[in-house]
Image (cartoon, rainbow, N blue to C red; front, side):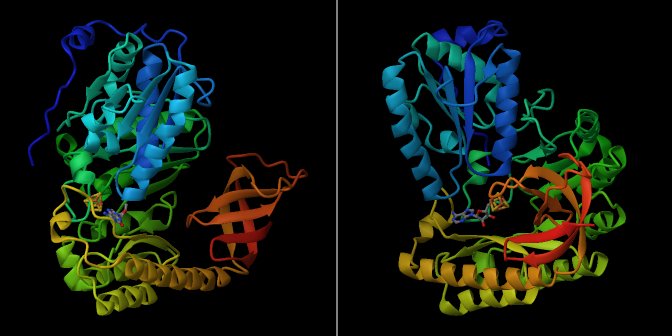
Length: 462
Ligand code: 5AD
Ligand code: SF4
């Protein structure tokens, strides 16, 4: 897959690109709104880090901002529809404040490129590998020039950029970028480019800094973490997990996303060995039919998938599992759909992200058409969701009477006298606030579960 090379800056902006930009933003305020996956949340923090270095300050709302950036997702059509809707809304702000700069970042910027720039409301369009140029493009837009930067890179990892994180106890740390898997339905390899990994020592240094500044939990991010590879240090993902667990022994370590073909025994064994690696795995299966998996280019069979589940449960009997499922992929029959439901009954996931297939331009499957009618996709999706809810409710019912160590996140949204946190197994746990013990956000508390729903556990402090 060649890199896509599209430097579409005009000559005036190109000359600005060579100038120092550290002071372009003095005092100006930027609001970044994030859509889509956790990688985008992490990328938004990188963009804010880049802008901060150039003198911009973070705004908390569109109303307070001089610059509004939408970090977008292109994975399904409805994700893109949301952005078009938001841009129409932002147009009202822009009419009142003509000097406001509006930018589209992320996967949709990479996919639609100049088509987005043709919209009056959009001043800049920046793809996932060009975030270093955001200050320069914003400065150009302030001078009245629209700008676009959508070149993909084989090397960019933003290793030297300090992300501007929102305060909290939980941090996202991207360990790699891009994806080389080319599942036939997926736009990500086109919008995020080739796979490349950050260096292991730089990641563990970042984890130590995060611990020193008060973070209690990190999630290592990659589209396919199991293909993480640091050639200079001869390290794979299992090595990175072990090095991370040792570098910050009291930090909770999570990661996502795993790939059933690439997930090694060593990764599973490393998880079992270190208490601070959370016992939770997100392992998408997508379809329970070997024929559909082959068409999807998922590179594994149901048998291989179940072998990974067997290994996980052998090493960590209480490990929680979640997954991604697509219904109505092209040519999916009722029999294929039943195989998906069967796999869900066999594995019994704690959680699932479930989607109807959405054809994406440029992908291999796009050319095969979209032959499963919308109402069939939707009905199959409803069946998948109903089954998952039933299974999750049963699993959570089985949690009653058990005690979990919970990382305190803060007051629950529904009721301020109750607090919420997450278990090692990534379940949301609600418990009464306790002034006497005076615990604070970031503490680990023990909660005995006495009630549950398919999504939440409730309990008392012990
Ligand atoms: N249609 C529906 N779902 C998709 N996903 C990726 N591409 C598509 C698509 N074209 C889902 C997969 C993936 C998750 C992030 O999004 O399940 O694992
Ligand atoms: Fe898309 Fe497949 Fe890569 Fe996941 S592994 S990002 S589904 S191409």
